[in-house]
Image (cartoon, rainbow, N blue to C red; front, side, top):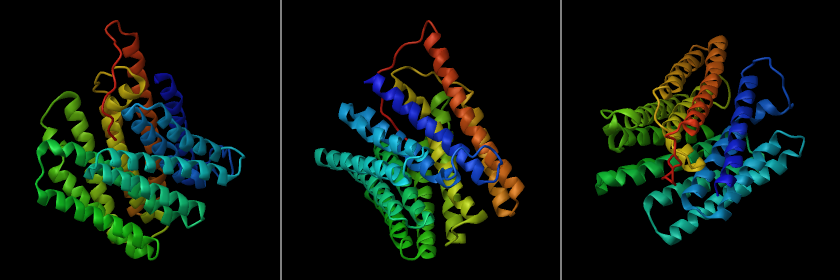
Length: 367
C-alpha cells in the first residue's frame, strides 16, 4: 500500500504550497497570480485541500484498508481542480464527497466499537461535511470557515481525548470536556444564523477546550522529558496556548468577517494551534505513511520557533493595524512552512541513505 500513499501525500503538500502562494497574494504581495481566483481560494486549499486530505490519508493508513484511500484521493483531486480552469463547483463537489467518505468511515468505526473519542472525531468529520455543503450553497465564506474550524478542532480534541485514557480521567474531567465541546458546537450552529453571537460562543468553547487540554492532556506532563518526547510536548503545549488566544480574540472581536481582527482570529487557530500540532507529530506521521524510520533532530525546533515568532509578528500587525507588519509576519509564516517541508525531506533522505536506516512498520497516526 506504500506506493498508493506517496502520491497522495505529495498531492497534499502541493496543495499546501498552492495555499501558501494564495495566502501571500491575498495579503498584498505582488507575485504571479497564476489563476484569477487564487487569492480567494487560500482557505479552501489550506483547510479542505491540504488538511482534509492529510487527515483522511492518516485514517486510511491507520486502518489499513485499500479502499479507504479513495477518500483522500477525492478531497485531494478536488483541491487540485480548484487550481485549474475546471468549473469551481467540480472541485467543490469532489471535496464534499471526500468529507462524506470520512464521515461514513467514522460511522463505520463507531458501529465496530462505540467510544467517546471516536464520536468526537466523527462529529468533526460531520462538521466538515456540513461546512462543505454550505460552501457549495455559496454561503459567505466567513460563516463556512467557522464550520471548517470546528472540523479541525474536534478532530484533534478527539484524538487527544483518546490518548488521555492512560491518565484514567474521572467522570468529572470527561464532563468538563463534553461541556466545552457542547459550547463550541453551539457556537458553530448559532454562527449560521447570528454570526457575531456564534463566533463569541465558539470562542468561549475554544478557550474552554484549550484550558482542558493544558490541564488534563498528556503533553504538559511530558515537558520534563527529553528528545522527541519533549519536542512533541512543546509543540502541543504551544498549540494549546494559541488555541486559547484564538478563543479570547473570538470572544473579544465577535462578528468580524474581514480585515485585521478576522485575520488574527483565524491564524492563531489555523496556524498557531493546528500547525504546532502538525509539527509535533510529523515524526510520527511521515514514518507511518512512508514506511520508514525518521530519527529525531534538534533541527525540528527551527521551524517550531520560527512559527511562534512569525505568528507573534503577524498578530502584532493585526492588533496594531499595521499592514506592513502583518505582511512581513505572513511572509515568514510561509517561509516557516517551507522550512518545515525542507527539514523533514532532508532528514528522510539522509535516513534512507544511512547504512543504519531501516524501514518502519505502521504506527499510530496522530494529528
